[in-house]
Image (cartoon, rainbow, N blue to C red; front, side):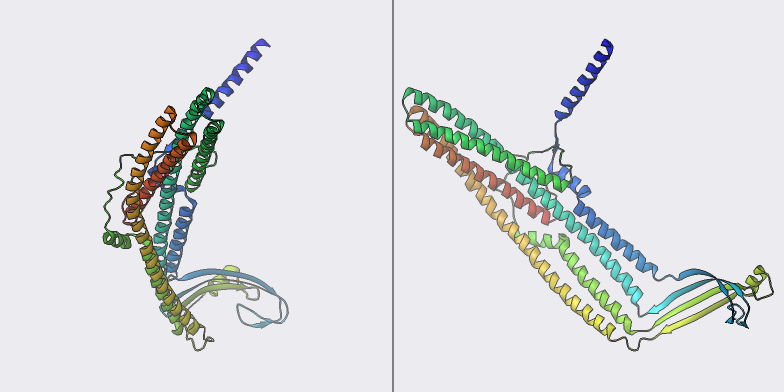
Length: 443
């Protein structure tokens, strides 16, 4: 019995150790490139776009197969009693008839107003369009990853700022308590220091929550399970944030040639033009080639089953011509609709060009502004830091009230946040311009 207890105790110890080990697993650190590569493989929006491409490929292959003949087998068995026509001999009989028919038929369209060829061409255009649309969705995911990643980094650095402020304010509470006990400050100065410490503690909690919210958004883009913990890699702090070279004309020309949205719009026009060619084919005749092989058996015929199948074997080959005369103006209406759709596609292409120009122009202007904001906010941060250091020294000497020290600290905090925001906005807009030109995103 004692040995059983020892074994059970060891088992529980192993389980507890395994749980502690699992809880202490260090979360994987993801770089921006890791996030982009993983999202392009696993994001459901990208997968859906890939499936649409696969469907377009199936449609294209199906339309090519429409040039081939169709071959069908048929068989029937019938029993007739009374006055009837023998289906095999075509004689009028009054006996009970048991008949069997088997055959193979085939048909192939030789000409259908060139609709088959135009349908193949249209489906090829639609396949190319689907491939480009897949690239559009991939680009959107990459940009969403970039924006979310930088926002997460911003919130991560905000935690550090908030924690440093909390440490400073807690030290101020200790100093204020000493001065209150010594009778050199009033009670309200001490409570002001306590209030600032409480506010900074709240800011730390809020900053951590904001970081976790951004992590959630990033995990959703990556299609990671909710319980998986991740960390993100910090960027190179030695980047020259204020000296990015920006050439507006070059950026726009590169974007026009690289971004797939305009190519998608151009192919939409081409697809609608092919649709017009297809529906115009409804005005033209259709010529088809048909062929049949068949044989049968009848119980009224005085030969064996195998002999009748050999004797009754027949073949036929023919041409079928269908000439449209009047189809209730359906072809005319289809032509009008296709013409309108071409005009709509041209308008959509113009809108797409405007959207691309606006997107690039906005990113360019924001990048120019962000570079200037980085310089200004960095100078403001340095000045606010020096003022805060001086205020702390004055406070230690008793030459500054707690309220004034709190104001100085908040000014420095706001300057830090402003610089942090301008830094990440500058990185974001610069990377957007790089991406719009087909260049790699590198942090």
